[in-house]
Every structure is written in C-alpha cells, then in structure tokens.
Length: 483
Image (cartoon, rainbow, N blue to C red; front, side, top):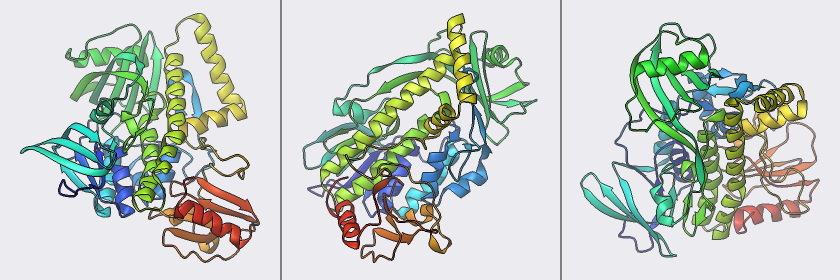
C-alpha cells in the first residue's frame, strides 16, 4: 500500500493500541490490505491503564481463538466491586465467561498484535500522522517517519489514535464533554503486604483508590482526591501515593519501589459522528469515559469488532458504502450509554452530601437485591446487555447478541465464527455456496433459522422459513445490501 497507487490500497489504521490491533487483525483476516501507523517505537509498553476484560469482549476474542490464552494468563473474578460500594455478582452471566478477567493491557496487546501480524497486517512504528485529507475517492495521510516524511494513500482510514486523535482533528470533528477527574495519580509499585482481594477499591475521606496486580510483583495504583487539583506536569512522589492509598483504603500495604508514577486527567467526551466520508473513528478517538467499571478498553474493542467486517464487505464489493453508516448508528449509542453509566459510578463513589450518600446506598440496595436491576446493570457493565437497532417487524432476535450456543456435532458458535465469517444456523440442511458463510445445525430441536454476523449479533432470523427465504436473507446480507 503506497502512494504509487492512484486510487490507494485498503485501509490505514492510525494507532496500534488494542482497538487498532483488533481492527487490523480482522481486516487482514478478511483479505484486506491494512497498514498500522504507530508513533511508538517497536515493543509493547507495560505502562498501561486498563486492567480488565469483560464477558462480551472475551466472547469476541473467543470468536478469534484468542480468549483461552488470555484466560490462562489473567485471573477471573466472579464478583466485581464498583465505585461507591456497588458490587455486581457476575457468576450467573449467560455467557461462557461469567466473570471479569483481571489482566494488564499489555498482555492483551501482545496477543492482539500477534493476531494481526499472523493475519498479514503491516506495521510501521515511529510513524506519526501529521495530516489527513479525504478527496471522496481515497484518503491521503501525511506521516512523519524516523527518516523524514512520507505520504500514504488508502481507500479508507480509521483513527484509533486515542483521546488526542490527530485523525479526529483533521476531520474537523469536535470532541465535546468535560473533565470528570482533573488530577488522577497513577503508579506502579511493589507491596510488602498485598491485599487479599484481587481488586481493591474504596472511597473514603474525600479520596478514592484502586489497586490491581500486574502479575509480575508490581501493583497498579489509580486514585484521586475529590477536591484536590494538581497540574499534570507536577512531579509525583511516592509519599503522595502512599498518603492517598492510606486515606482511601486504610493502609498503604507496605508500598515501595515505584517503577513509574504519573498524573493525568479523566474526561467524558464523545465525537458527534464516528464516520466522515472515508474516515472513521474507533476507541478513545471516538469516546472517552471515566475509569469506572473498566469499560473504556472493552468499548473500543467492541467498536473494532463492529467495524472490521463492515469495511471488509465494502472493500470487497459485497456491500455499498452505506453499510458503514450502520457503524455509527450502532456504536454511538453504546458509547453514550457507557459514558453516562461510568460517570454515574464516579459520582456515586465520591458522594459526600447526606442526600447523595443516601441515593448511593439505595442504588446499591437495588442492584444487590432486585433481579431485573441487577441483570441490567451486569449486562451494561459487561457489554452483553447491548443490542443493535432492528428493522420494524423483524424477528425478536434480530440485532441481539447471540451467546455461544451449542451446534450439532459438538461444535459451538464462537468456533464457527472464526475467520470472520457469517454463520447460518438452521433446523434443516442448507448448502452454503459461499466461503464467507459457515452453515451449522442446532444441537437440539429448534425451528428457528438464524444468520449471525461476524461480530456475533443476529443479522436475520425467522421461524420455520422456506429455503427460498433463507437464500434471500443470505443474499441480502452477504451479497450487496446493507443491514
């Protein structure tokens, strides 16, 4: 892929974090030429903020054959304590992964990078995008490289380049919102007396702190004071971190040997559009949230899973560009919901007025004791509760996440989805005739025919359909019309 092609190649992905890596891997798996531009030098940094993978993300990774390796590396937790004393029991989640997986982001990046490289994605490190232009036929990307400058061209470009996205700024898109935590401390430290809990979190005395293990002898500390703002460029001392943890958690656990300390701020922001012509946004470039519930990285990976197969459909000529509009229509509401829920958790954690603390206690009681409220909260935090809009009159399953159902012959849905395929599950034999489609039978007696998209959501369903109806649905979704 280079400027010598008049119409450009496949896709340029700007940003080699988790969202960009998953997207690049999916595109390359689908046979799309993809180049990842990453301003960092080669090598994965372990100075990462994210520490959890939720059930829906693990399901998506399972559909790529990656979840079991991460499960073996991380540590599952079937109860998740949220900010403000809220706690979610995840053991009853209707998922193969009824837990949250505690695992550092750099381990996730390691596995996703291998996935992308083995699929054929090209990586260019030390390449920083300085400009971008869409002429309606392709996208020109100006890049500063270790040896000077370069100009690349592609049919589409995706900005997965974080909160300060150069791609978003080049698109001229605003990023409205506000800072919810203006001065947050991060530190990687050793603990002489680690806490018994895998995740330790609490708010007290106007301070909040969170502790999680890296797995290499270090713990990540994240915390802040409700009423103390410090400039981000002011140095952080270990005693300051100790004081914060003591106030929020009651003791400092013998904290020592910090290998890294920093300050940053946490914003709630969302771009008004995830697509502008041939340029799209994903992950933190499209939305940023407070760290409550560990939803940021997970939401970005879900963006990538939604976008990758759609770009492949368009680039291979199986669908028109209007299919890409469904990316915004489906993912923007999810990003907005995560922004609201994570913000509400932060405000609950830092509640200090009597009436707000009473509301927090009431909310915790509802989540803990009222089944529908608990299931809704768990579905939102873990991602399994979201569904996408369906056409009027569509089957109730359309737009819903399909769990890892058992298939005839001992297989399961996530295995059938591997390779980025659609999966048709039928009550009777059906001849596929398309290598983009896997056909399977239900393991039990069911009359439903179900067409599952590569991202694991139902594209179409019908009860006891005629073969002609199945063929029409397959043709519509695989052969030339948007969902």
